[in-house]
Image: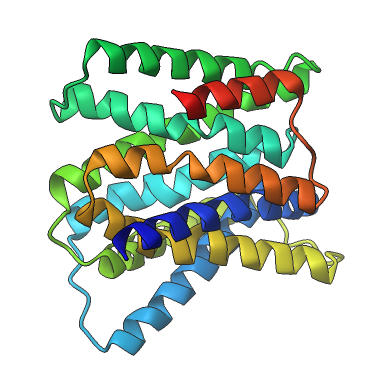
Length: 271
């Protein structure tokens, strides 16, 4: 059951990518991130209410990780989608696995064999290949936002492993999403952006569903998996995201990957 929950969270994350890519056509990255995190928070708040238990949230750690994930990570990812397709983004985001492993090695003292180091370096090469689309300058320049988002995920995953394993995954997700909503909300007010009034219904639905599948559902499931499964299982499971993401991207007409991007993504997944 634990592994099924983990797989479900990965598929949910993958599906959310083309939905965000569609919504970004009419929303700014900041507003879309705020919508997604708000929807995720409301979903988790409902789950918390149904559980009828008082949340135990270690705010000293939850505040920084909430700003980081989903707050900044979603903002960076959505900024990347302004010039990239969903397939491109989801393939580059496979680097989350690699950064999670690398940070675990240098911070938590995880050990890799020579063979594992070889595959790790091969995977990093794959991220570079997937990022360097070579189609046009704008596309290449926004790829870095996906890479930065992946780095934040790696930091977040290891903080969770080291300091927050004893807390309820629902409580942690509730705190994280609340912090991200406040952080992005303040950022949005300072930016003085206006809410667009001519957004079509299907774009609103894409934004809401992206928040549900990208924040609400997977954060509870993934936090649970991180606390109950070893890193050798949770790390590689992230490779399910690009498979689900590319399939959903093609199905929704949000762009198929180029040959170079596909090769880079396959290298990362294989590593």
